[in-house]
Length: 541
Image (cartoon, rainbow, N blue to C red):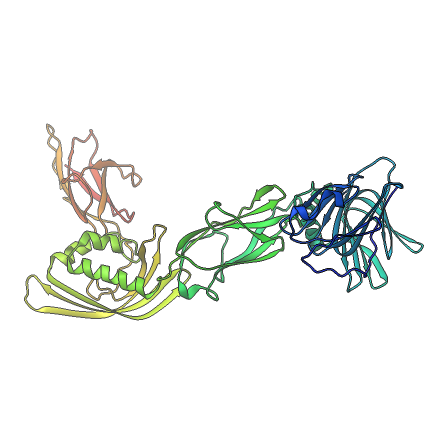
């Protein structure tokens, strides 16, 4: 039988960072700390080997019984070896100790404390002592053990804990989530030990529920189930000068650690094992692609969650609006219809015929001047909502008198995935259309203008001139039917006379040799907004 004596002895006072080796008949006293390996010569520990001092102050060694010992950086230990009796005594004066007792046939290990004896044939046991508070905690990670106090015995199974405080022992209890994490951390600290089956059994209660991220917030804004993409934050969006990501992890195991990546999985940082988490980092100009995963021992478990990406732009604010307005001013005064279309086509408030409208307005003016004044600016959810007063002066080609127009224009600007600042909506008066309200989206299809009767020559058939016009959008398709009207999009396609249907007014020519009995032809057109126009009927005579 091997007996280890974990007796609290207050006769030795040691500093927290120094090592003392003092031989008192067969006794070795030491205090663990951040020391060199040579400070622990193997010969100083009779009956022990594989002694290692690690960078974090932990000490690991193996006794002749093959028992493994981990001592924390705050631990004070006493080790005695009796070669005659074949007994090793291990005394914990203060701090923490983790023991791994091998399964040996017929051999019992006994740990003696001032409060009782603990015996076990195998298992992993964590002892936490506080000398000043007179506290002893014993947690079991594997195996079975018995703690004897006076004439009472307390059995200890995996996942159970005994607690002794100031002369009184409390009923044993099942390890809670935070206590499991403490026990798990001892397996992992300073060279990991194999995990027992106990930690795997923890999943039994939640095996039908996968780990998930809930109540995720970026800069205080909630992330919906559809995700959180292409948002832009500026200096004013920071919380106490930091980028802030917070949320809650549910259905995870106590020994699993949540990790976060801000660059689509290239680098990972630990967030801990608690349910709620908070991550704060100093801001920098960058695109952030947020991912989460769980780390469990030496393997990782991906977590499914809505896509989360955002960008931090230090100057995202008035400077962005001024730059966008300067670009608008330059294109307008140069009569650059193509550039203005690219600048404005992302605005959902405009019709699809914005290019044709710009060509008409710019071609009718000889000079153009415009000035902007920012009246109000609000940053919200990665967008800039601003109110602008404009003053526009134009000179018409058919008149030498300048025309002055002004108004207030409301804009919504955001940054797209390529880093460009685009106009996504506007309201109020608009400088493009000379102060008129912004036109709503096109809801009306194109009209067909053609003869209602056409003579059919038996030798060459009939020829019909067709004109399709739309007030708001360009023509994209003209088709006809013979005999009866078919479903829109199923007729015979007519080519526009200029080769491409891409303007609001297009002409086409229909040449047809109708079959016997066919007395009518029907024509209709489709615009770029997806609207089919009314059917025009032509009688064949």
